[in-house]
Length: 237
Image (cartoon, rainbow, N blue to C red; front, side, top):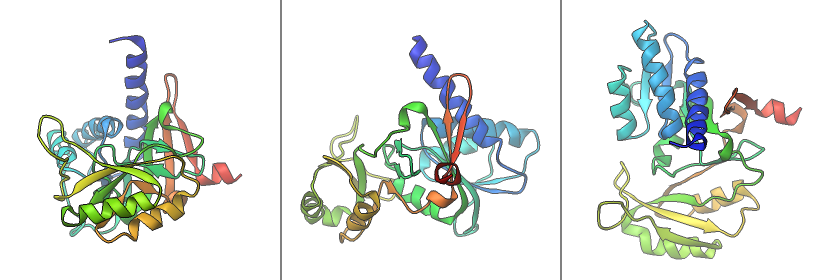
């Protein structure tokens, strides 16, 4: 492994561990999906073994497996509809703490968990912090409606492509049984407006734009030497 890759892993681990240390005894914790979050789960599992009592709500099957392997008790939104803190990753974070998520195709459940959380903590490495959102926007789509949805997404100004699976013929199928359409826009002038426009298309289950949770969002940016913590008041001030 080269030094750059080692530095990236160290940054992700630092951000994940710092987020895990924010969790207090008795909390219900939203467990996101992604490489940086898995370091948080690793550290949270250590704290559980040390005597911390928590319940985790995983946002994907893979996260659920990792949580169980780490000894973290699992619960659901049915049993715990109010979450104390949700910790997740992001593909991009802009200066207003708006996000693009969904590279792991778990953004529908991630958004449900983020909405139910009192506090939303986003863990990223420095590469994910951008001046302007511009990554592909993943959209989870009901298979029944995928063709008309593709046409409606094109009208919004993007090139929609159904995400293909790896080591499996055909499209990616989410934990919810839906398809993922990756939408590349030339630019995203107004993320909030675009999020609402995508959500209004019949057959769209959810997009990877996260613009509604900035007031309760804390971003932990992992670095080689230390982590940077950003909240909206820091930006407004």
